[in-house]
Image 1: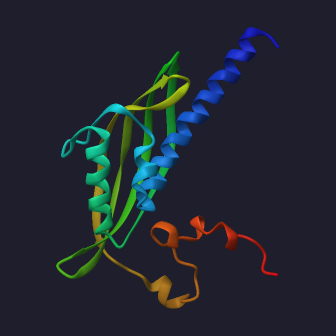
Image 2: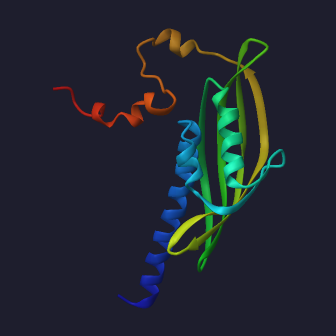
Length: 176
């Protein structure tokens, strides 16, 4: 295999590792798994969300504290533009975040659409986030509408932490 092909394969592997970091970050948020969410950052990482500026430990505690108050969350990725320059990479990751919140004793659906602007660094062979900023492009809050759950009461519903089916692997098989 020639060196150009090896370089392409290396970039694909690097991009996959970085993308996996982003997925773990989202899963850590949605499943309220602080350890998973924290694992994607270098210890000296810096996060700037406008309303939060600081290091990864403080950010994860902040984010988990906010999300715990919600009834449910789901963070989705769209396109991921990741440019790799040796042991440094830059990313613009489109995201849509859904939050079921309670305000004035009423359930509301908060949707936030934006982008993560990231810097990743490979240190000792491991990619992690060294800088993350969230840019919000639009947001909206609507009254909650759960007609679907009324019409299909037997649907499998998502849950937080270990209660979610994704964490119960023994149940992920055909019944005997």
